[in-house]
Length: 304
Image (tube, rainbow, N blue to C red):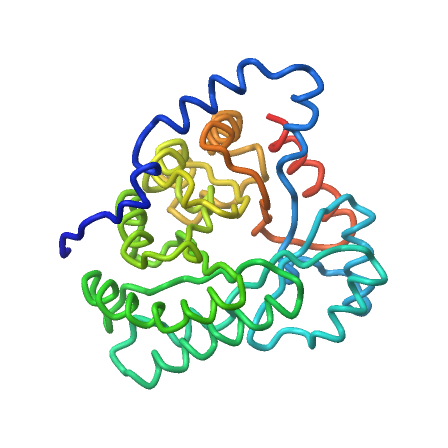
């Protein structure tokens, strides 16, 4: 892995001063302040989790009635902006961002330049759609280690491709947020921080998936290392002991709050780094009853 110098603007992220100061402030909050503090986290779901019949507007209305604060869509291939506008108007539910829908197929780490080019165009399309939908971000899996790309090749190929989309992201005011997934790449919080810093743009950050991280390092370690690079969260449960004993993917087969993520410590540490904003469930969805259960469990996580 090539060494790289950290830009000056990242120095604050690599010190404990900000977290310490925030923790000291949090300790002096009044009762009223704590009520406000509990509302700092906004809960959402991925649109694919909504298994209720009807139009996009119908789905948005169900989510709004269940107490969700927003929803995340997909692009390319998502709904038209006019369809989204109707759904938002009818329900009052905002779209906070989109997920790049082709980043696993047209990877930015592929050896074929044409495949990478398709991936960049898809990312640009997602950025435009997020802006049109009223969102603030695009979730991106930046690369994938496989027989076509080693770890080092993933790093060297994907960085230049993402940079091609950064000017558009900066012009639109939409963040490119990199999710930690089981792709063999950036499965370490320090490596993830280095990667984000090398891209050197305020429009690039981390879309931190709590459940995905447990296998590799405790969530608190991820949060303290990434610090203010974290701009949004994926809410997912994982049971480390189940994963170790029954197979790694079995660890995901638990409900929110019933695994080993350690949500009270997660939420405490997020507050210490000053995080506020969106937490989006990325778990099996279902009908209205199932979505109501998810909303209730997310509320308990945010209040823990």
